[in-house]
Length: 468
Image (cartoon, rainbow, N blue to C red; front, top):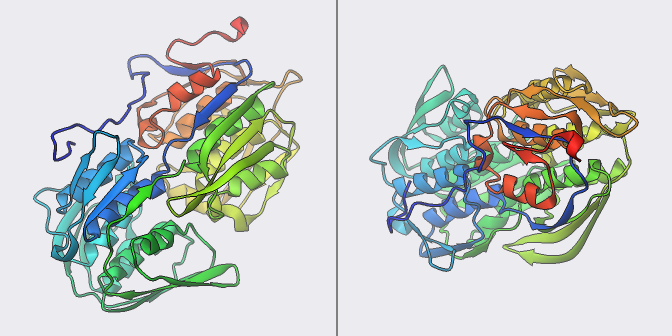
C-alpha cells in the first residue's frame, strides 16, 4: 500500500523472520525506559474520522502497524487523500460534503477487526457499494453483530457463510436512525452505528448494559460533533443527532495500554526488574488490567499525568512483584478484554488461583483466545482450567520462580497469543518457541526491539537459560 506521494508506509515488520523459529528464554532483570507505541484504537479512528471530515486532519504518533496501514488503504479507496509529511506526521484530506464513493477494488482490511467494523459503519452513511475482505483470521470472525443493525438502518448486504467476510454492502445513503441495545458489550458495534448515524437523518441511540471504550464519543467531539451520553446503572446511553459534519483537526495519538501490558507483565514476573513505560493512555475504559495487577500485588505507579488528543496519559513505573491470585470482577471485562491472555501469563506466577469469568467474547477474537491461551500455558507446564466463558490459572512456578517451558506454541495468527507466549518464555527453564511472529506487526511493530532493549531474551538466536 502506498500513499498518494508514492511513499510506502513503514510497517516495521518484526526483525525475526519466518525462516527461523522465534523463541524466548530465561532472562535477567529488565531495566530501562520505553515509549509505548501509538494506540491502535485511536489510530484507526483518527484515519476514519479524518477521511470523513471537511478539511485537513493531521495525526501525530500514528501507529504504523499492519492493521492501521490496512485502514489507511481503505480510506484512500473511499476517496480520502492521505500522505506522510517529512516531519513524520500524517495528513488526511477528508472527503467532506462529497462523501465516500464506491471503491474501484475490493477493500482489504487485512487482520483489522476494529478497522473493518468501523469502516462498514462509516461507509453505510453514503450512497455506495463496497466489498470488504480480510486475511484468514479476520474472515473467520462474525460480522452479524454490525451487519444486522446496519440492515435495520437500511443497508443491504451479502456475506460468506452467513456473516463472514467477504461481505458486500450496498447503501443508498438515506438510512433510518436506530435505537439499539447491543446484546454484547462491544465498542466496535457502538462505534459502527454512531459512524453510520453521522450521516443519518434523526437520532441514533445506543444503549449499553456495560460501559465500553468511549474513544469514538471522545473523538467525535474533537471533530466537532455533539454526542450526548449519560450513565444508566453499569452502562450508558449514547445519542447522536444526524446528519452531523465532522471538521478536520489535529490528533496526537497516545500510547496503547494494550501494548504496554506486555512489558508491564514481563517486568512484574522477572526478578530485579525496574522499568518505566512512557506516554500510556489512562482512559478508564482501558485500564482494567492495571487495576487487576495492582490488586494482585503488582507495583504499578502512574506519574506525570497530562492530556493528549482528548485522552489522559501517564508514565507507568513497574517493578518485579510478588503476585497473588484473585477473582477478576466480570464487570471489568470490557475494560481489559484484549489483555486476558497476558493476564493469564502473570497468573502463572501468582500464589493461589486467578479466576477469570465472563469473557466468552474472547472466543471470537483473532483466534479463540480462551482455548489458545489455555493451550499455550499447558504446553509449558502451567496449570489451567478452561471453561466456556473463562479460565482459571493456578500458581505454577518453582522455588526459583520459573516454569518448565519448552513448549512450541501455535499462535493461530493471533498477535496477542504470540506476544503472551514470548513473555512467558522469559521465566521458562527451557525456551518457549512460537510458530509465527510476523503478525505481531499488526499491533506492536517495535515489540522485538523494545523488549530486547529492556534486556528480554527474545529473538531467533537467543541465549540459553544456562547463560543467564
